Length: 246
Ligand code: ZN
Image (cartoon, rainbow, N blue to C red; front, side, top):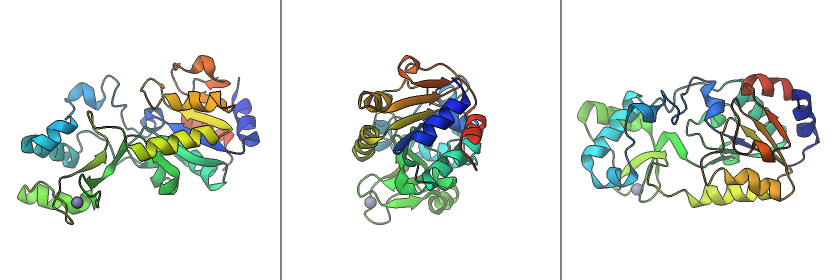
């Protein structure tokens, strides 16, 4: 199987879904959190229950956020993100389901309502009570200069980055939208996910069982390679730049 086979599959697709994981963003210099050298090999995750129950943990979490130690955001989209954005702009891809929290699909021009974020978004914060959005830039000064842990400007509730933390339940609305997109597509294209994390890894199989073609581009073999109609173990940016015309 080759890049031209993938180009033909995309050309023939009418209702395509793109699913992205850490591998598309490592090409922007964002380390895979789960890999050796990734953030969780350097620091212990702060579980959701710790954040909610312990002011010292909240302070530690915000310190991490504003010092950039986790390197969750701040990178620029790469050729892979831009190719995905072209697929969406052309009406070819209906949705982008992502395991990433780095906002790089939106930064590359994909409308926010087309991006289904399974693990949230690290580039802004949200009230845990009323879901009011807070921009990190607004919270940063008062935390760094006055040491104030952020609270909601609307209801006074706890504010946390919009990432889904360990111990926090998967968000129902994105999960439902991802399921719907998987059921209604005719091509499910995986870019840069080892497909090892459940329940997210179930979506390609939902699509496949419902008659869609499954294509996987990932540097390493994945658990679902045996089920795929096309597998390329290559760099995403290079492959997608070639198969999606600029
Ligand atoms: Zn609130």
